[in-house]
Image (cartoon, rainbow, N blue to C red; front, side, top):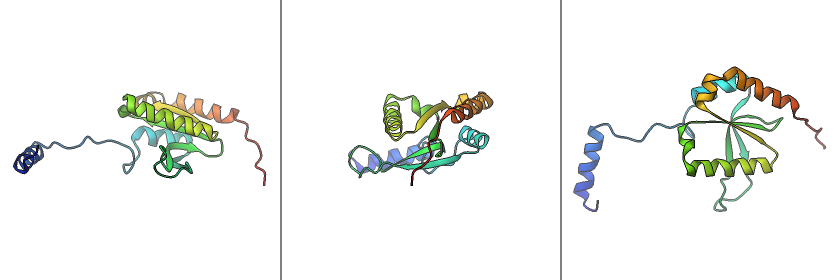
Length: 140
């Protein structure tokens, strides 16, 4: 729409019918209910930041934000909504998982619906995994 008048008309029409961007989770939004439920069930930290150490413009963000994390055992939990079904988002998720795996993180991914329907089983599975991870003593 090159004409300013056409843009203004379209803008007012969209505003009048209540059109706007879809509401999504993610940065700047509160945790989704499934994220809240799983984090509370595990007693783990939410929106945990892992710095990449890579400068901007190198194809990676400066940090990754994990939905739920246990830094001691290096287990990251990602709770995904419907936006994660697109091929582009799946590629971004894979890149994130591969990067984190390179740092020693184990990334587990669950769909919102899975968490809502199977919270106890998912919590149990995650805690069993945590108990099987051998943590080596840190050297000073």
